[in-house]
Length: 343
Image (cartoon, rainbow, N blue to C red):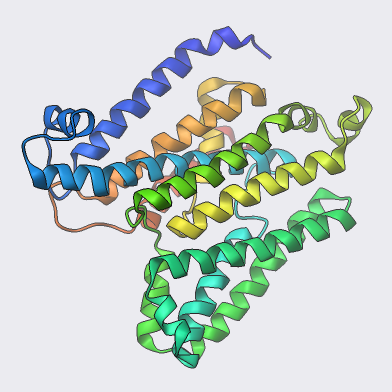
């Protein structure tokens, strides 16, 4: 592993790119806002144009901050899963956490169309959908933790996570079969993902839980590095595998669950970002990778969100469609370039 100081240039350039993309993301959209007016609105609370001020402060700035947290959180979760399962194609959703969130929303929207009453009212509320998604992901998290205590083999845990996803997908299919066209459309729109629906209070809540997930990851850096050389090596240097694995699973579940609850299921960022980061930084040291992958994830999400806005157009593309269009070619290119992706 190279000394940390050798990565100063890469980190500096990456941070500069994040800042530039933030400004571009804030400036572009259905209404183009000049950079100088953007600075005036943010730092002096007025640009001289009340409409621009409202758009920036109440819509674009929360959305940009959400994009950074979503991109970095999914990228970190993807890195953790690829390391713990030693599988380069593992992503943040392999534990079934996202499927649990989707099931929670499906029960509210699709079940509400059949049962009516309070569920119908809640399904029309963004807060209601977020709470349903978080509860669904939390229940799957509890199930994963219980299973993790009984399963010693990480590959078995991976398979069980995939089975959780299959079960929830089956339940959603049954609900969809008996639901109305309007409910199906509402659920489909939620599954497209959305970064722009959050108020400042919701951004603050997202940041709080996101921060908790990041704090849990930090003590796991040494175990993550040791797991690259295998579980036997990790045990030989005194790593408590059960405790470390539980911390990593909980941190990943918290990050994935809260992101899915507030922004919907966002594809491919968590899968592609770790590989791009390793190509750029050329290291396997998680002390470097965790910060680097967070920045790369933020860059990917900011680029995708800027593209999704279709600058100077009144239309907006689903963010999930854009991330998939970006992520899939990257993974294909990596497979063709390296022929075998290694951790």
